[in-house]
Amino acid sequence: MSAVISERILDKEQRLDGRKITEIRELQSAVDLLPRVHGTGMFMRGDTQVLSIVTLGSPGDVQTLDSMEMEGTKRYMHHYNDAPFTYGDTRPMRGPSRRAIGHGALAERALEPVLPEEADFPYAIRVVSEVMGSNGSSSMASVCGSTLSLMAAGVPIKKPVAGIAMGLASQGLYATVGVENPRWKVLTDLQDIEDGNGGMDFKIAGTCDGITAIQMDTKTSGLTFDIVKQTIAQSSEARLQILDQMAGTIAEPRADLSEYAPRIVTIQIDPEKIRDVIGPGGKVINKIIDDTGVQIDIEQDGRVMVTSSDAEGMKQAIETITALTKEVEAGEIYDGTVVRLEDFGAFVQILPNKDGLVHVSEIAWARTNKPSDVLKLGDKVKVKVKEIDNLGRVNLSMKALLPKPEVHEERSQN
Image 1 (cartoon, rainbow, N blue to C red):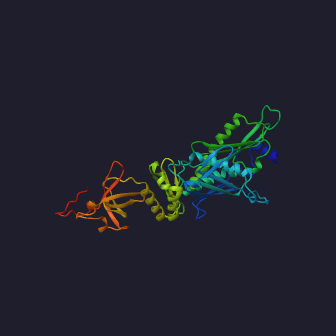
Image 2: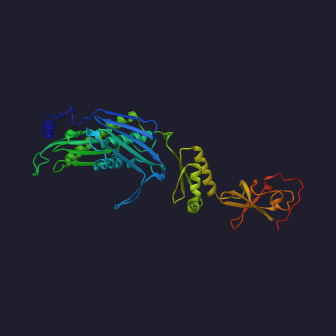
Image 3: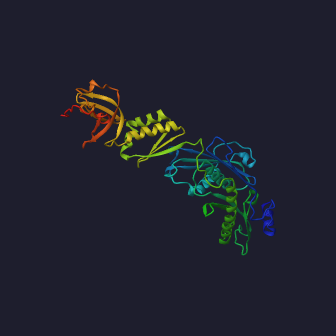
């Protein structure tokens, strides 16, 4: 059957479905097919149909890599699923096949060059491509579906990416002994039945500017430079046609993330203060997480990323972290709590890990014999930072915030 198909193409440039050798099957695309997820995109080329779904997570949701070949993390993950019905089969459903893993990896590689930098978009990104039907290059369809879903989710990719599978009809290229004048024709948008002896499956993905990923298998004894050159030129025309069709559905990433996606706020703190946020044995950070319901990720350079879908919890967590890491400066005013009383003054907590001393002479303009005469433990007081001495001790004043009487009795601080 494949020999007859190839001969027909070589003799008359006539394909089984009536297309020209440079013609793409009917294209369709759509976004927002599933309302609750962070982003969806559907791409259909002929009978090949892929639905891609995006999920955005906190920086802590990245995939950990720990194998014999590599160690590290991966922030962009693409998973490709092709159930038996995709190919008109009935068979047990087990784990992903080597083919599915390879197709997913190819589509993942195609999108990696256009992803935003982590500093600009710190989310972990997972795309799952569900193949609903396959008749030629579902992996390239998943590239297109992934692009649509990422733009629909508001992921600021640099440029849209599309992919196409190129085929070959030939005679003489697959012989054991070379043929002097082999005949060949490059086919745009390969379908399964055209991938026989003397054929190839040359997948090429890229943007309007260039190629981002290539994968090729061939049923010949080799390809000439002219075949490769013609394939790349023909695929470029096809890719631009697909990109134009996708642009009619969604031309660029949306300005705003889905309302269901978590928000990430990045705070830059002094790296020396990281231990104050974490606390002994993680006690402090775990309490913040438990109290607010956020996720917190801390980098060694002092970046603290707070992830939450709850605006109030996010605000509370940020305020707590800011208070834990804030540097006290002279002249600042705080609402504090009296935590200790001595004869010479009162200690007031102005930040979670920072106390200051209000000397007895700084409590009020009127003479105060003992702090306990006017204050008690737990009192909420407003104080002003008078100075920070060379030992880092914070001296506070309450009277500096009170109106100064015309006549008052001065008290020595000795």
